[in-house]
Length: 215
Image 1 (tube, rainbow, N blue to C red):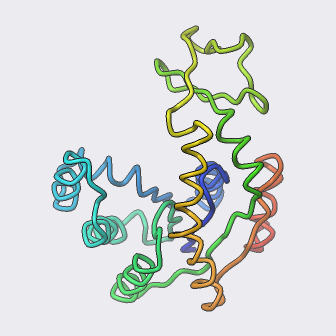
Image 2 (cartoon, rainbow, N blue to C red; image 1 turned 90 degrees about the vertical axis):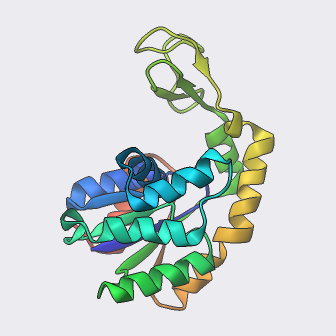
Image 3 (cartoon, helix red, strand yellow; image 1 turned 135 degrees about the vertical axis):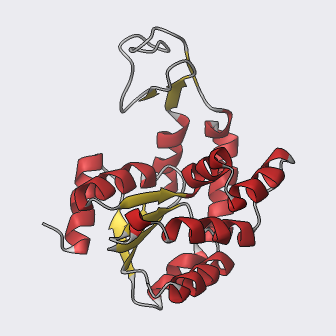
């Protein structure tokens, strides 16, 4: 299966992508992970991406598409893949369509994770992480045993700067302006399935499997 996930920041895309990739035994292609891997491996797309990233600029669409071309032609994605974090706008979606057509493939399903902004804000602003070991917590849904202290290594927990409420609002505004139009784009192509993303991760995952008709 070839699946694309859509959803605002904090909707649980990363968690659900990983769970579904494990269930279906297909590759999870996260744009962020792919960028870091391409840079680390010094691939053609990675070299180009690094020059923009080092300058503090957004990686342009042609470079992102080149990176996806490198990844979608790998033997371990022939059986299917899950896209996470790309495309982020209609122009990128059209470029992805062209790339998939060139490769003789197409998306089987686009899963849109639907969640209220108020719940997103609570979910994101409550996240805390350990700078030392990377463990992640939530002050309400998954708190550490001792407030502000990592259960794993005992180091102080921090709130990421982009998880603060004022920046969360900006991230959501950017999503509404740039990425939300993809819902209509894929709905017109009859590949869109909307999933209510509120609730426990296992509940959301069960809804995803039901939408995909996977036992």
